[in-house]
Image (cartoon, rainbow, N blue to C red):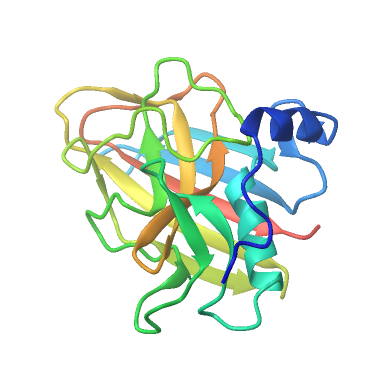
Length: 214
């Protein structure tokens, strides 16, 4: 099936979305979410807590919604999304019903999707982003499995922990939410915590995306 809404020039899209953005917080008409970050030492002592609100969804999220709303069958190709490798992928294009269709439930040690962390030198939010600037691998920040729950009918909480096994302090400067769609990985939200999050050697960082309609 021919693409109904082809990819447009990212620069033009950036200009169009500029009027719809809240500075440093993303696109204002999308659902808001809160990110909670807690760092705990080996002995269970909480040494830092951060929490901030954002709407820093990226273009992939809007295009994903359009693809779902505009498809009559899962096998349709309505639009394309950009995967974390920078490749355009047909969407929804569900060729295998045995594969995930939007899951964030990555297992322990999996850094392909779910909540991911990075250490970009000068990261900044842009709606056209499709990947972290500098992902931190599982050997340095060992991720747990991702969990998800819903409460009060309009609050979704996605959680994941990362243990610093690098042997030295690490600073997380960027955070992303990435889905697995039919074996392709699409970033849908990107955040830059102010001042970064310092995780001492041996400590554990727990991140929670709390997504709500209110």
